[in-house]
Image 1 (cartoon, helix red, strand yellow):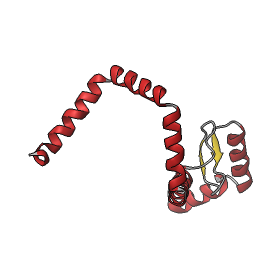
Image 2 (image 1 turned 180 degrees about the horizontal axis):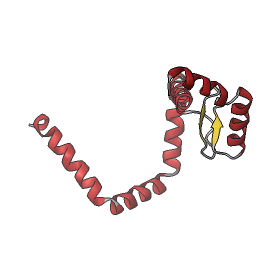
Image 3 (image 1 turned 180 degrees about the vertical axis):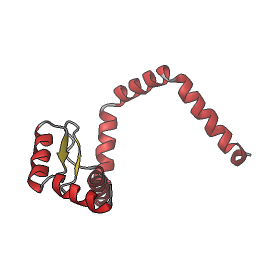
Image 4 (image 1 turned 45 degrees about the horizontal axis):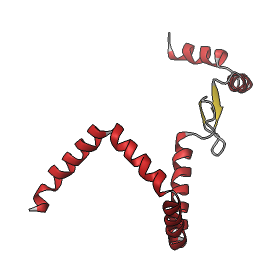
Length: 124
């Protein structure tokens, strides 16, 4: 097929913008695709996923920065709250740690061996 014939065939068979919009709305209604709430990017549908990967990363970084700023501004208050919580729930915390150590003995031992091996030269 020559280039001219191909272009003519494409003009005749190319879907119109209305058909494309109808197809998009149909796929959205059938929950095959969804639209990002912030940047209007179209991506595959997943339940409870509102944002595309790029927007999700940006939102995560912004949230991380806000938390960091909040912690720096309220460091003494946060540390005091943590101390009060620890004093209040000391037995529960120790019991949870004891159970974890009992269930994950090999994991803890391998981590300790790796740490010892890594820091062996520093100790001498």
